[in-house]
Amino acid sequence: MFDTKSSFILSKLGIQRFQSQINNSNSEKIFGVLWGDILTLLDKSINELEENELKLLNKIIKSIVEDDSEYLFSKEINNLSEIKKEPKLTISFTELKPYLIKEFSLVIESKPLSELENSLEDKKILWSKIKEHKNGSSTD
Image (cartoon, rainbow, N blue to C red; front, top):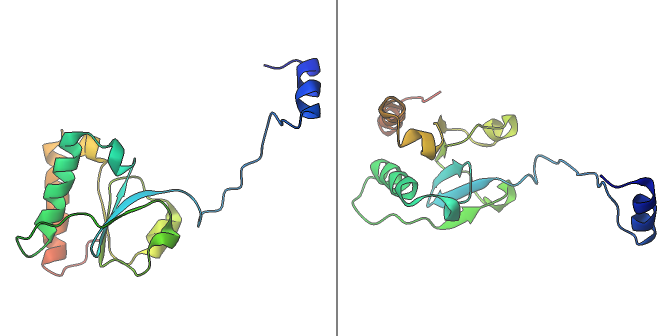
């Protein structure tokens, strides 16, 4: 901790010890990836995913896509304003914030990839939700 003298000197140099942070939900940073018209929300950047987490994510996306073509991600998203049109499906691998639920019409919630890869039960739940989506059922 700074003492009073240090705080005074820092303030004279124009350095503030504490800066208020503006918390605007629309500008809050998120981690997500657009895969064509599918959005995945992650608990960390795609560049920070472990190799096995990335493989699992690719398998999940491929299970949703109808054709056998290679389905690579098209864009990493860090802010909701980067999404130009609503994705047909959003899969959240993170705890959803209330404003995100309102933003997207179809959301499948899942455990984070790091937890999902080691839990057969959580994988079964996710696959079930994906199957419901592919069959046209509601996933709420």
